[in-house]
Image (tube, rainbow, N blue to C red; front, side, top):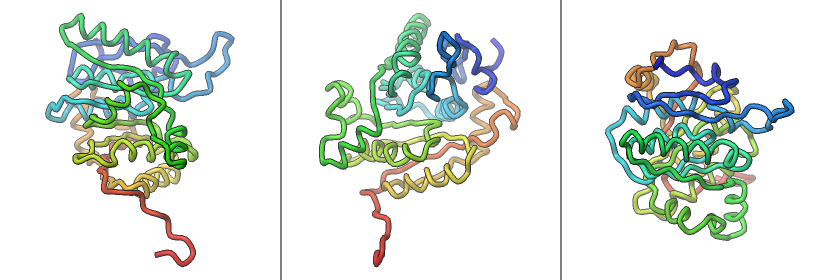
Length: 266
């Protein structure tokens, strides 16, 4: 099969054929760009995005370290399935209508394809709303009490957290980082956190990264050259302009959120 196309060239494809990085295995990803009467779905999560492709390629270039992983804003599920194929037990989370429309069906189909190829894989969909988590934290309630016990236990033992293409709306920045912080806080060994983003709006992206620092994370961008090599090793060999503006970052949990300095503050 030819190398996968960059996500912007695939938005119109209802059943997208996409190879896993560094593999000949091909997944079929259901996408939904419009309703039956032609109206837009009103969500960004029902098609593939560049960040998910690039982070999947980068993580596939690292030494294998299978464990429990959680994806926030999993969308069509490509990154979750890539992690599952590498041996991770993945909890892939999103909100409706993404969860029912594309994520759950794609995970089910993808796990069956992987199993049929002799690759045992675990990827479970779950509903997770960052705003609800942030509201629960603000009210002093347990942040994941609305999840079923299995999903909550998975979060508690996760050693890898991933999120891509999720710094796109100002009102979601604080809830996203609050959710990630809640998954890291109180752990003897906090999970590794990876995120990928497109720098379409530099001011919004910078504000999103600052939100992570304010939430208690130390952020480090992965060198662009390393990401280029990862894409080459994935067998995709895109032109630079095909994924211009995509960045991969690693976040390390360093402690409680830092309060913004107010009048008279430090």
